[in-house]
Structure formats: C-alpha cells, structure tokens
Image (spheres, rainbow, N blue to C red):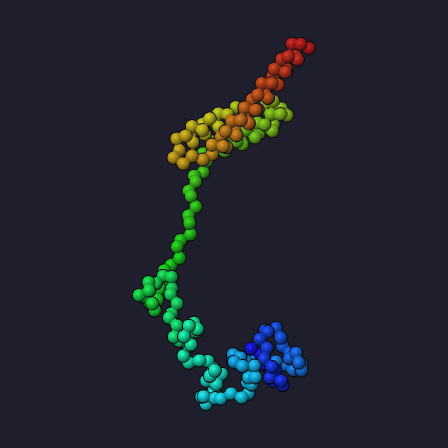
Length: 189
C-alpha cells in the first residue's frame, strides 16, 4: 500500500509512484488500509522497542477463518524422503548413481572389413581395367566373415561382409561381361 505524504490519499496500484492529485512522490507503507481517512503518521505505539515498531500492526492472534498463520507457528515443510514421524531428521548422504555403461559391442571380424575394402577396390578399378582378383578376394573373405559371424555370441559386421560380397560380385560380373564382349568382338568382327 502506498500513500501520499501531502494529501494522505492511499493507492493500491503497484505501478504508481506519484500522487495523481498533487504529484508528490508516494511513500510505501506495509500497513493494511482500515479506513479511507487513515493517517500513517498518527498511530498508537504499543511497544517502545525499535525492532518491533515495523511489525506492530500485525495481528497477534489471527482472526478465525482468516488462514493467516505466523511464520513461527507453521508446521515445518515435509521433505519427500521423510516419513511424517521423522520430521527434523537429516537425510543421510548418498553418492550419486554411476553413469550408465554403454552396451559392449565387439569389433567386427577382420575378414568382413578386408572384404569390404577389396570390394571397393574391385568396383573402382574393375571398371577401368578388368581385374578379377579384388572381386574374388572380396567374395571369399565375405563368405569367411559370414561364417565367423554366425558362430560369434554377439554378432557384428554382417552388413560389412554382405557389402563386400555384393561389390566383389559386381566386379566379377563386370569382368565376365568384358571377357564376353571381347570374345564376341573377336568372333563377330
């Protein structure tokens, strides 16, 4: 609640800082407005202690049904880890839980990786010059890798082995096509 020190008019708007009648600076007062002619300078002091003068207007006994309770009379707030009978007990310190461990995934068999590499080499260089050796190695190592993956407890690398077999097969198919094209060109002219 704010009031004007000149005309003693009270304002409840928080955003107002000047009196609307005479323009003087409003002063803040925490006392509730009881009547419109209330003058903050005329107030009976019940206590002469300086520490009590700021809060002497607060009611000592709350009116029935008002819901106002003095801070020192409130029940302590419940902590989620306590039972209602354990109020005031401190929570024992516990270390934080360990971070989750990533799932163990073994490395793919080396034959699968080598099969993929030879398959890539066979496709890249097999289109320029017809060399079947990388394609043959890619297919053989891919089949070996698939048999190793079937016997492994945690299989990984199946996609690498299959990709190596497919690219090795493309290299061999291109080699066979180039040989047939060469034979047909020799035979038919």
